[in-house]
Length: 283
Image (cartoon, rainbow, N blue to C red; front, side, top):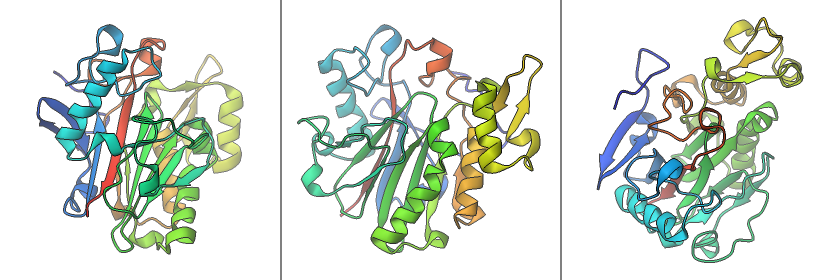
């Protein structure tokens, strides 16, 4: 399969294990002895048609048995127990949940009470956390000093509300993390040339980020709409929150440019499954 990259220099790793293809990031993979992380592709599962094949969501109209099997395969490839997964319940807000072992299984083996949550964070080993995507930006966080992991779902609403900075502040407050220690990956999502937004959305970003970043963040088209760079907006937010430039891996793969490799809401007009990011601290 031919993958289209955003940049000349590849900044993520494509892995294949147990028949499952998934993505990892070098700066997080350097700590593989301490924690697990991975971002799914649409390859290696059993779902059919537009949900094929590695759909990891129970909310896309898929057969439950297929989704459960997909979770088993993804978990085996990465090395965690899928029955202990803790699901997010994403609604494009900036609310977080401190995950503990008491949450294990919520969303996959039992009903979840973790509602209206776009960010998960924990310092407990053996508790896998999962968040879902199909164009929005996945943010992975790891503090190797305090041994804390976190994940945040950053669509345009979360991005303009600086969800990345809010997660860093949450890690500082709840776990004593220092932003200078935190490693962050901005995982596959929609790229700027694929992401057209209306003027009202663009104006919100100009209000929050200013106009000093020029076309690199937003540029206006002849039709009066704009092309928005969510990756850049997230990077700006992280740097301003104190993350060191050398501690950030930025995605080089667009979901919309690679519809045979990744699920994309825009490229499929909503006929798609869900990708997922998983993190877990090792015991």
